[in-house]
Structure formats: C-alpha cells, structure tokens
Image (cartoon, rainbow, N blue to C red; front, side, top):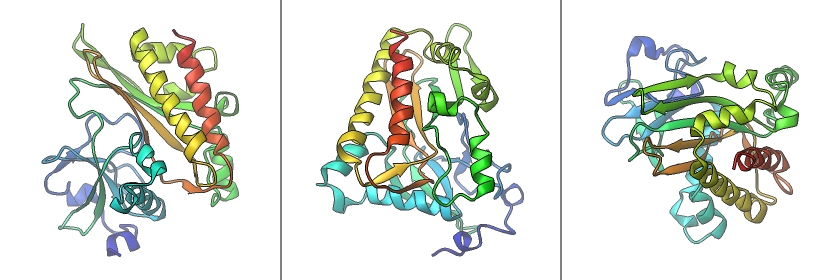
Length: 276
C-alpha cells in the first residue's frame, strides 16, 4: 500500500506542494471538500488529459470507496447481473492516478457531464440516517443534528449550479441553502434546478425509479449505502439528462433491504412526480 495512504498525508500540504502535474481544481463542484480546506487539504481535481475526476485515496473512508468501485468495475464481474445493472448508475472507474511528486493516489472517475455544454448540476444526499456503523457517539450526534427535516424528508440538497442561458451565467446554491429548505419549500428548489422543465422532471424520475428497482431486486443482503448522494446533471439545451449514484465512503455490508436509502430515494421521487 502506498505510504501516502498509510500516513493520511500528514505533513504533506497540497497548498504548498501545488496541484499534481496535469491536473486542475474541479470547476463545477457543487458539494464536498474543496482543495486546501478539508482535514487533509485534499479534494476533487480534474485530470486535464482525460477530463476524469480525481478523488484522493487518503484514509479509511476513501479506501472503502476505492474498494467498492474496484469491485463494481472488476472484469471478473462482467457476467454478474447485479453488478452489470449497477454499472449503469455509477460513474465509470478508470483506474488510479498517481502524483509522482508526492506519491499520493487518486481514484479516477469518468465525469458524467462529459459531452454536456454548460451543465447544470444538483447533489442530493440520500437517506435519513447519515452515520455509519463505525460512528462514535459524537459523530452520531453531529450527523443527526445537521438537518432537522432529515427523518421526515429522507434526503438533503447539498448544492447546485444552474446555468441560465438567457443571462449566460450560473446560479449557485450551497449547503446552507439546502439546510434552510423545509418540506414545503423543497419543491421550489427542485423547480429552480430543472427550470420548470416537465420533460426533465419526468426523465429524472424515470432514472431514479430504475435505481430504486436495482435496490429492490439486486441489493438485498448486500450493501447499505449510507451518506451517499445522487448527482443530477443536464446540459444547457436540456437534451441530455443523467442521474448517477456517487460518494461511497460509507457503504457497508447489509442484511435485508437498504431501507434507509430506499426511504430517501422514494421520497425524492415523490417530490419530482408532484411537479408534473
């Protein structure tokens, strides 16, 4: 195992080392840690040659995510129906990028907005419970207190960027906006994101139902996806729309159905359907 993973990059500060050669900050990020501001100072980057998104592999959580992506995209699972189906709903893994200057490793993921012009993006955390089985009491209390409507809604908007073609500019909403939403105002946020486009609402609902079907059919006695997100994206002419499952640092073995995820997913689908 690479030493940069073992020491959690302690003593290595990318703000001083600079970006790895051939990379830039991810310019359309709507949620999560930003470069230089996380506990490890690491965050998402873009690989300039391939346009892949780079996620640092630097601790136990990111190792867990790396292992899950590796399993999903392992060619030995090409004929497993459950894995084959899941691949439709997650970003493609393109191996590992190594910063040869520091030895840091990054998970390489295909950018779902490739081929989109001025994409609009929405990140939604799924499930009322966002702490995993390894969480201590302090972490449980912290996660439980983040959003007062978590138990009722089952999801939380983390951030979004909406491209307004008329003005040729983006509207950006961060996590504070998401936390401010109530069960009565979430529909306004979704309408803002899709710009009241019924076809987009319908397409996103269709793709979310397909994800729900995978959970019902293929994810019994397999995994629980805790503190995971759905990432929504569409291009400026609204001709292409995608939903992908992302953020797998808290995916654990599970017995039975993943009711926590399904509750949040089904509530989100209902909110989309109510706008039709």
